[in-house]
Image 1 (cartoon, rainbow, N blue to C red):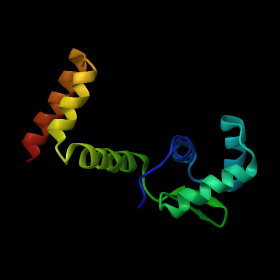
Image 2 (image 1 turned 90 degrees about the vertical axis):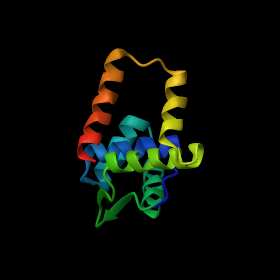
Image 3 (image 1 turned 180 degrees about the vertical axis):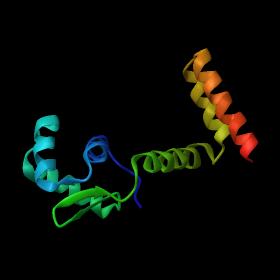
Length: 120
């Protein structure tokens, strides 16, 4: 599966995830309203995301082949692998060096780590 999506493709995928299952005709109407697209643009982007294995259009019914959470999880893993040689600690260190964590965010992250340790 090709995880590389541009901004426009991501917005479109998010629309499908929000409304699925959705008919291709309704999808055209939604994209016209939310993105100011014409019908051919919607079908072009839909076709590209179907080719990437993210969406499918079967008999005019559009659904995802991968849930949104799974897609973003895989995308995050790809970023860590490609940019941080697979080191999650290096990614986290880089992320928090540019954005100050709130105490609530730090607590939430710690709870995730603690839960993982208990499961592992």
